[in-house]
Image 1 (cartoon, rainbow, N blue to C red):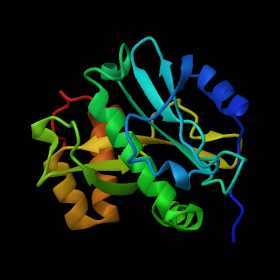
Image 2: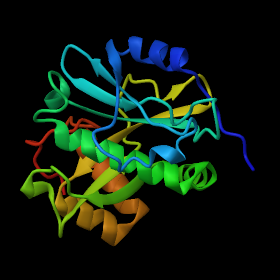
Image 3: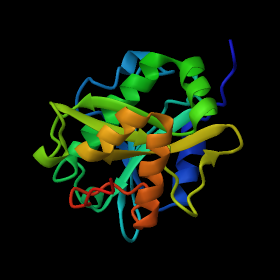
Length: 206
């Protein structure tokens, strides 16, 4: 079994302090994040604010208390600045379900997928997502779209990956083209200046 990089709560908090103002630890909205599969057997999140955006990040997928996944995942957008339980609730729900899917898959499977492809895609339940983001009751997301200037790891061996919701037309490209489609959509987002930012008003890029 491959040993994944690990962190503790203080190390994760120090990382996010380089990005913005770190708020109190949050509990999940529901039970879709498969908390029993997290290293410590429970799940938690951090709310971080920057001058232009809010962030909700997993706080413990890489925890040293158990079998670390070697990564943390976050979602970022203007709808998360004030109250993550308000207009940005759909993004928090998406992050939690995606975190659950990654935790359930396990460290070795997730690590192998990231080594092979860099970008991952998931289809999760629509939850609270706006109707024009939903395809047949599902919401597509990319995991791993890079934001220039944002460190992609804590230390050298724990990945910090953004979760980015997909419009139905973008999900169709990803589904139809696989890894090449994921890259094409991510490059189109970057070309229009969105990068990994999540925003309900973002127009389709594919």
